[in-house]
Length: 360
Image 1 (cartoon, rainbow, N blue to C red):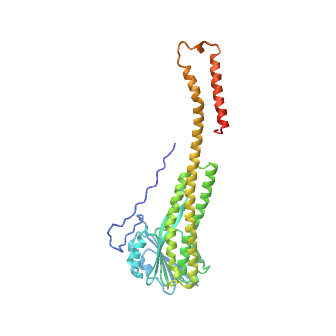
Image 2: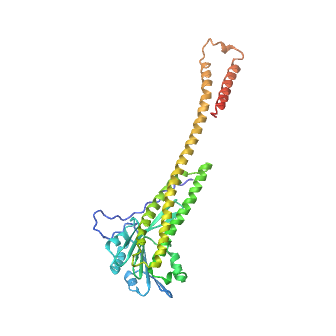
Image 3: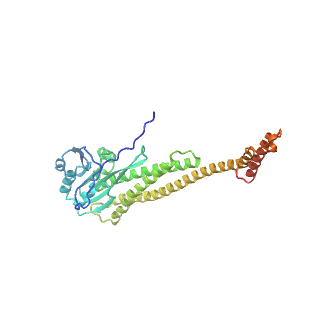
């Protein structure tokens, strides 16, 4: 018994009403019922303290300007949390609006006392052959870093583990280096997706050439959509990184600029890879259509050969199927095998003629 697989229901999203005042706090992502997760990580070179709170005011009361304070907010649907953070750190209402606008394009802005970056975390869903997006924003201050994630995910777990272990240079550096490491982790995920895409491109091309692939057109279309999504994510982020080329952002130390340049170079390489992959997907679609057209041509050629051979045979059969009374051949003893022989000779002669003309 076959069961019909239904397409997963599209998650309902909040929508900002047209004409809303600028800076109005409206979460535009998927509707959620779970509580917002608040985590505070405070560290120096010699110590680290991690705490999880449900009350934003209790968390803000633990801030210590002598340490690096990393506040991670998982879940954006409770706008009161965002509003409280905005009031405490004096964040521009337009920035708060961008944090809650989950469809916003990546961008980087410098303000008087903080640096604001919004971008997307991308993860590959193998089951649906698609890329899932998560809206994330980072706000860098003098001794703090705020990160806002659309949902709880383990993307930053590797950074938390490194901070907890005390290995590496993160505990020895300021908040700007932590900002770089989180950004670099997100960009590394882009690279993983692109590497997997290149492997699939080679596999699809091999299947097309060997004529062994199934569902090729669907995979090519899905690949082109994924590359379009990555293009809309990577290119604006690479353009935004040009702000660091000026080397005059007070919150970024000179030693961190080199690391940010490396991220910018990776994004540039990824942008070129994305464009190349899009062209390859287009070429594979054209190759797929050419293979299908060649298959159809072979089928039509075979049918045409059969039709051409049987056309004179049908003509002879039609003549002797008219049942006229005075047809002399009807009374000949060897008329039937003679007609069959003539028909076989005609068919054989046409096959030989087609082979010599290399039509077969």
